[in-house]
Image (cartoon, rainbow, N blue to C red):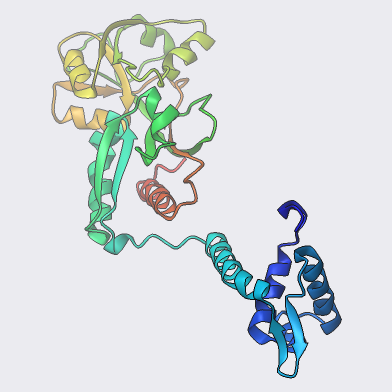
Amino acid sequence: MRSLRHFDLNLLLVFEMLMRERHVTRAAEKLHLSQPALSHALKRLREALDDPLLVRSGQGLQPTPRALALLPVVQQSLAALQAGLAPPATFAAATSTRHFTLATTDYFEEVMYPAFLSQLLRSAPGLSFSIELITPDVLNEALEQRQVDMVVGLDYQDTLPTGVIQTPWMDEELVCLVASDHAGVGEGVDLEQFVSQPHVELADISGLRPSSIDSCLVQHGLTRRVISKNLNYIAAARVVALTEAIMTLPRQMAERFVTMLPVRLVEPPKELPLLKMTLIQHGLYVNAPTSVWLYNELVAFAVKHGLKS
């Protein structure tokens, strides 16, 4: 036979059906072909394989030794193709014991993850989850190697490694936080008042969360002075409670601190952008049943909480 590149793989279906039926007319009917078309296909098969394959006899078509040897190989190959081309099975979350790993922000872990996990476990009690910090290695390697299933809640990224897919997930309002007794700030601030205050913010230990606030200020020809960069929101909020600094953070997180610390909310400048959170996964697995299920659950969670972007 010549190179497989020049072989019509559809002829394998013809061969398998002829070997099953041992009759040209019946095989043609099963394949929804005319008898002349099937006879022509058999001729092409014989030429390609340089063997008569099926020979007429009083009992119909009889296979040659070459045909008998080929049959199991062809059947296995067709079965493998059929299985590979079939739509992926759905993920049976209700009975699964699958472990998922999410790389995420402290905001998602603190504010949203407990409710998200509780919601999932009611219908899928066998599942388990791990939370990891977002690092550049997560985007460059861990997603592709499936050490991390999805990156949840990271700010929108202008550039991503090849093969990594980003989709909008949630938009969250930003709000400012100051000490309850901060006399220099009222119920809201404009841009000029905003930059006149000392600021507290989270340190970007991942290198993947450039400040959208600073980008906004630059567009207006302004900068701010940051007096403290903290690793997590609660530590930053405690600094705010004991100083005259201002902090900008997602509204849901800020509202929690109002009940925990001597701090109050301040409406931010109207020019500040929304926090745009995303879902990030690797294109290799985006259609895998587990990935489709997890993505849909996260989207449903956002819709339920009125935060879908």
